[in-house]
Image (tube, rainbow, N blue to C red; front, top):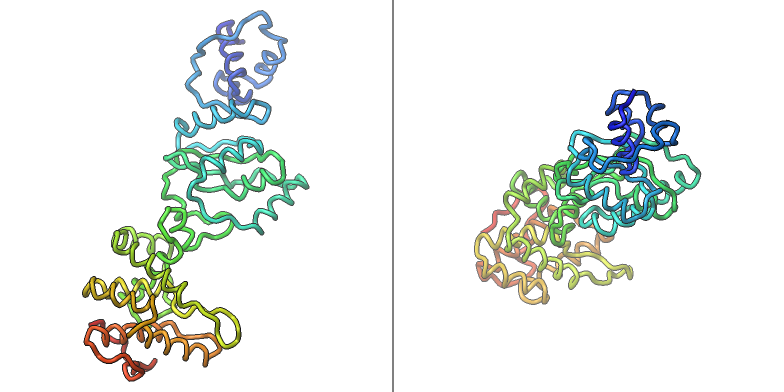
Length: 355
């Protein structure tokens, strides 16, 4: 039996949005006792307490509440809910829109195919409560679950799912829910400027350090992002990546087949421009301008790359491309005349050193 004071607390908790099962567990009674209070069969004349002893427990939001109330409760959960607890909540399409608009600042690019798949399941009422959770980081932003929320919005159907709060914001590196996260996704979700090119540049720098002849080297998400965070997150790196993207756009031209070809990809160009800058920053920037404007040594390099790609159906071994830019740089620094004579490297040779 519950005392009158406890019944008043139960009424207050019901009003605040607590689930009957959780209230029953809190007071150590059968859920039926809570239902009797909720329906007025028990304690009809007892008023809800103003400040129940369990008022500090997390509240529940439901689609039956006003959107402002749902947002208020969600905000409280984000700031107070422990990280080792995940509970089932029902997300209304309106609350999902609020989360996507206001709490999804740097998540990965969504996959339209994955969203369409989820929408179809939700519209056919085939979406069960799975073990996958929506995840909010310690900063309050969503770090996993945007595809489900976007599908909830598009389908107009509430989404019932586990939700976890206060998870470390770097946890997305170890997540593999929905579309598998690539290295580029990790850079994008972390808000790295020009994320795709920056990620590619970091990978090429790692390959150059390890073995510049091994162009197929792969790295796990934490490895490549950790390398960037520890060694590359500098104004110079980001300046060079932005410049390499300009060079890529300037040199992406029509091939003889009529299709546009990317002759100087920003990632590998940025990687080697950074290595050149470590030798001499002023000269590296001057060399980059020649690539951008198609003059001097830059013109010679671009010409030989185009000729080799056009002769090979648009393909070019990336190691060869990298070796040739190093030879071009070495000739530039040595003030050797820019001509085809500077391109002597072949695939069976040792990778050239940077002068």
